[in-house]
Amino acid sequence: METSDFINFAQSLYGSKEVALHAPIFMGNERKYVNDAIDSTFVSSVGEYVNKVESTLANITGSKKAIATSNGTSALHLALLALGVGSNDAVITQAFTFVATGNAIAYTGAEPIFIDVDKETLGLSPESLKNFLVKHTTYDANGNCVIKSNRKIVKACIPMHTFGLPAKIDEICAVCRDHKIKVIEDCAESLGSYYQNTHTGNFGDLSAISFNGNKIATAGGGGAVITNDIELGARIKHISTTAKQPHRWHFYHDEIGYNYRMPNLNAALLLGQLELLDKFLELKRDIGQKYKNFFSAFSDIEFINEPDNSKSNFWLNAILVKDIKERDRFLLETNNAGITTRPAWTPLHKLPMFSNSLTDPLNNTLELFDRLINIPSGVPGAAL
Ligand SMILES: *Cc1c(COP(=O)(O)O)cnc(C)c1O
Image 1: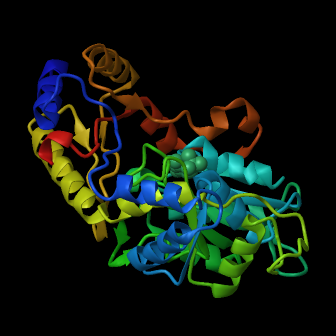
Image 2: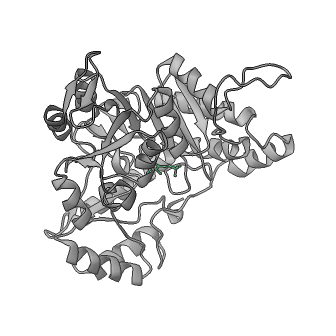
């Protein structure tokens, strides 16, 4: 494929000369709701829009409980705290993820461990996970899975549904269950994605969603924890709101809490976006199919399609080129032409703060970093 073939195709797909990687689109009730929140004077951490967002999210995902948070990173942090993760623990995640997943683990004082992804889903590989656990862990007297070298308890595992592609989440959960490891799904990118017929986020103990400006629906900044465990849900709400005991006027906080709630102003914007989610999903699927057809004509490019038995939200489309040289040439030529493309995240174990972490060989992660490119995937304004 010539890069110019791709540039022409992206320009015609989006009906413009310059194309963003993923720009938000506001085409519903967003302005009306934000104005209403301002008029009500409830712009901060309590308000009707926060409640509405929480019930809407529970509905969309089919989960029992959703707790709106200040962002996706705080949602991950809260999920780890609610499971009691601390400095005597280790938490497994994938090396191929956004830095926030690793940061949230580090905030708790736990040790992050980075495992490989599989090439089909780009999510945590259940085989790699199992191999790592067999090789590096044993059980302590209480039956906890502990790292052989430092006796830290492997308390949780955070698989991530990369770019909206559902990971092999039932296999991952089965391996974790066998080792008494709790599962937090990082669904930051997977709102509207289904594994088999169940919305992502319903397989683990807790899940985190992000509503950052580049995600499929945005609050400006925001996130949510979803869960089917009512007790864990109540605990998360408590610690996300300064651990204040409810009372009409007294301020009594029963532990160190966090100010991680979503402001009502952001919830107002988000409610408008969530009402559009089905439309966004339809338009993004259409873009994904058009890319798939386009790239099928070129043998030197591989389009990453949704895995079998899954329904992706097509949040961020990705292709694989031959090698890192081709990748860098493609990135330069497309970005010079005003078509925004991006390489994958630097694998987390290559970042200075995580460079001493335990890992497995990470063969797929390293290959994906060399070969993967994200291409424009937003909802095309011209299509509306
Ligand atoms: C966006 C993202 C987050 C963090 O969300 P913020 O709302 O930006 O804090 C976490 N994990 C992944 C995989 C993400 O893509």
